[in-house]
Structure formats: C-alpha cells, structure tokens
Image (cartoon, rainbow, N blue to C red; front, side, top):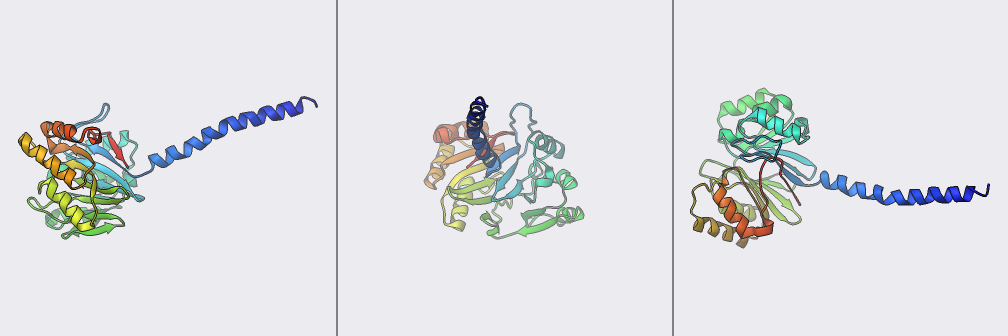
Length: 266
C-alpha cells in the first residue's frame, strides 16, 4: 500500500509528459488542411513526379477545392495527383483559363473520375467542347465579365489576346492571382484583379509567357508588379528559365520555385 502513492505519481508524470505531444498534433493537421496551392502539372517536377508541357494547380481556399487548368495529358495529371494523395473526387470546381490544349487536355480524364463538378470556362470556348462536358454530367458556367464566382473567389473575366481568364483569391494578406499563360500580360492581369477587388495583390502564381523577352523588359515587369504591391511570386510553365532567374533576383527570398509537387501556402 505504501507503494501506491508512488505508482500514481509515476503515472501522472507520464501523462503530463505526453500532453505537449498531443497539443502539437492539432496545429499540424490544421496547417495541412489550410489554404494552399499545389502544383500538379508543370514543365518541371520534383523527384518522383512527372513533368510535361502545360499547367495545372490544385487550389484549396475557404473550404473549396478548385482544379485550376488540367495540363495537357490526363494520365500524367492523375498520376501526379495520386502521388500527392489528391483524390479527384475531392474536386468540386474546375477553372479553365483558356482553350489551349496544354491547359485543357487533362479535363476528360478528371471528368471520367469525377463528373460531379462545376466547370468555369470562358464563354468563347467552342460549343462542342461545352457539350462534351455536359455529356459527362458536369455543370458548365460560362464566363464573360469579371465577377465573384464563389465567396472571396473571383474571375478577371475574359481578357485578350487569346481570351483568357485568371483566378483571384481574396485573402487576409492581399490578393492571390493564379494565371494560366498570361497571354494578356501579367501586369495587366494583376491590375485588373486589383481594380475588381480594390485590394493589392500579395502573391502571383502561374505561367507568365515570357519566353524570349529581353532581360530589361522582364526587370521592368518585376518592378511594375512590386509597385502594384506583389510581395511573393511563383512563375511557372511558360515563364521561361531566363525570366525565372530574373524574378528570383528581383524578389529574392520571396521568390517561390515552381514545379510539380511544390506547394505555396499563406
């Protein structure tokens, strides 16, 4: 009986020792399930993933799961998603920036896995493209003008050339702008996003379409983006290696490298 108090005391010590460990687990889960963008298709890829010409990113924001563009090859897209632990059935919305095949080619593979989605696309897409989506049982929302498509989530509306829309997330840190190829010009797109919402951009992610653009012009673009309030930048896909190097120099620690498997959170 004399040993009983000692045993109880020992048990209490062990319980108290493990409490901090349990407390540490919840923030990790919350962070993993929080707001973030995961690159699932790109010209570059982290080890273990497949790279290919095109772009797609999974956007998790305000309890919404949005697939932004679908890359060019459905098999590659699904393989990368599987390795990232992303279930196609978790996707509720698909946002297509423009008609080019390296951004829309993977759509049909996704719809075969999960037809219970809403697809936001520019209204200038061909009718047979829209009809094919309907054929899977998915819903189509045609975009023309800038508007809020979900709470805190906007489209820039169609911008030319090409007829491209970009995605805008309204966050506590500022706007996050996700682009497909930026055919209308990345600075114009960010300006449009800020005019729509009345807020400054914080992060810009996606293709900037700057292959072959002279260094002086790329640096001027970086300066313009900073002037618009952009703090972080993640150039992908069609930006070009030289432009990426220049953005890395200009934004320094706020430059985020792109590639399949890369994640940016806020």
